[in-house]
Image (tube, rainbow, N blue to C red):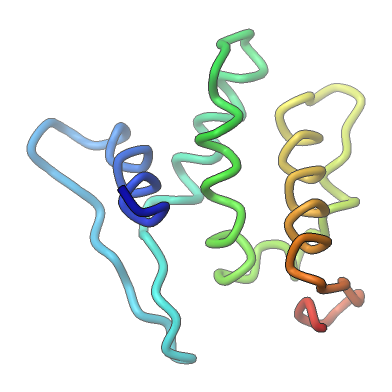
Length: 113
């Protein structure tokens, strides 16, 4: 199963049985799974409440979070929080993703090579 399909399954846990979030095409031509941010926020909440095994679900959302521009508004280092372990984890995953992609983040700009 592709990562996009896996992300779709994670996102669809938020909607009623038989419903699913669609895939959307951004103006730049890239495709994203709708519902990803809502699912990520829900998983952060569940992670903070002590639920185990959510890290993989959260990691699947990271590329979409970048494509949608959320890390442009709140760079990975701004996700760090002493009182919110889930948010800190997402920030670290974002920083790791940048490194793996050979990108760097410049404040106020998209991640670039």
